[in-house]
Image 1 (cartoon, rainbow, N blue to C red):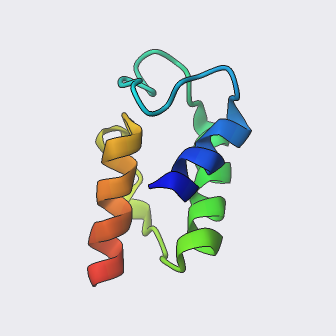
Image 2: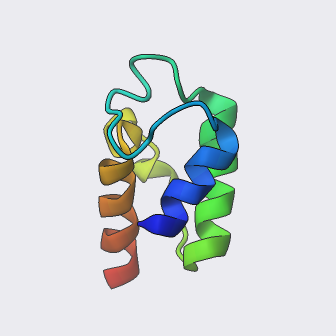
Image 3: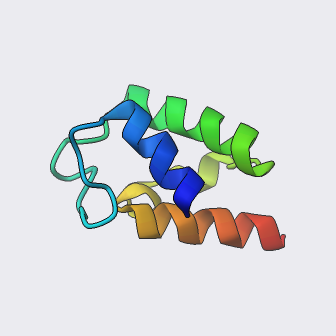
Length: 75
């Protein structure tokens, strides 16, 4: 989770991703951020995020993103 928070912080250093929810709804993460985030996650965690998993619910919070990474890592 620490590495994920580092990746998120590199996108928006002003946001406290550990406690912030509604990242999509509040407009903190936009589509370009999501593309960048997916690339960084793929590289850092050696998982591939398939297109069908790129939905707002999976990117609403750091916890949701972390749950997605763990799920993909188990597959």
